[in-house]
Length: 357
Ligand SMILES: C[S@@+](CC[C@H](N)C(=O)[O-])C[C@H]1O[C@@H](n2cnc3c(N)ncnc32)[C@H](O)[C@@H]1O
Image 1: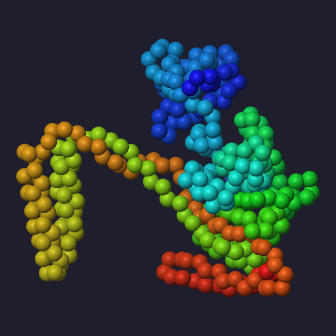
Image 2: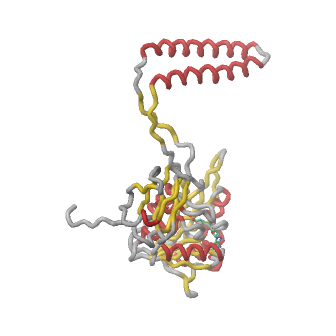
Image 3: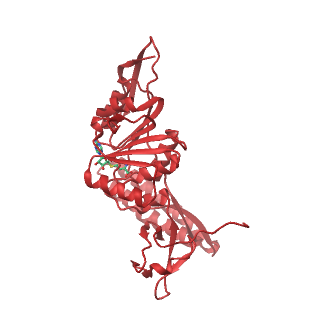
């Protein structure tokens, strides 16, 4: 567009190097230094002045990589993990369900590797604030340094144990959303209620259902409402071109090998019913193979697109429990019912909230 200035890479920038799927790295463009990879050596001076997304060639002009502009999404893919981290499907769901908006104050613990923190800081924007707590000294210091290096001025990063509360300068932070990724979230529910504005949303991430049950029971007891637990599953499918002919011959091979395994298992059993079943399976397999073989002479020789689930997906599976902070109304006791679902059926427990409605 006319008048639009095109941003180019400069010394001092943190760029995201894209070498391919699951090969994404952070690199700082420092003068007189270079980036080494299996694709070659890339001098930092060759990045400078290039537009983000433009290919950068190695010193032998053979291979190329891409340098992308830093953002929270790419940071999550590229960061050096100090802990388990949250990935994009969970992060997107957390931000949407917590209804985080520009200008909000959000509290998070623990900071861990700062994967979620970067996305939260981006979501609240320069007019908002993220206060993030981490009790592991080295991790807290590393995160603080990264926030500063990435220019995140809206982040307050504190080395503190949240079991004693979400405090900045000895006063509890008042916030619009609160997120916990700590091992015993149920033991800080009282502090969550203290910091979160009435009616605002809280989310706790736990890797196992027993932790979820303790957390939602404690939250219900403390008067939290609208309690729900979600799991997020996103499967990425890769598109590949394959000859039609290959697909049919591969199916025939699968029928031959897979079918034989089933038949031999059945045949090993010493009863008439299994033997009859094995014969039936073998017959239907032969019929299917014969039908597919008839197709081979008339198959088009072209290629077709196939969508295949990607094998390696970055994910840290767990449960996200969302709930609303108590809204105190005079005179009415909260009577809450906690329902958790487990394998094999529904379990219920009751709790009486402290708050008044
Ligand atoms: C799994 S990591 C969090 C990862 C983070 N959500 C991310 O996406 O990068 C959990 C972190 O919580 C910290 N932690 C555990 N208990 C804590 C507590 N009581 N107060 C503060 N931090 C705590 C741990 O040291 C650890 O770094």
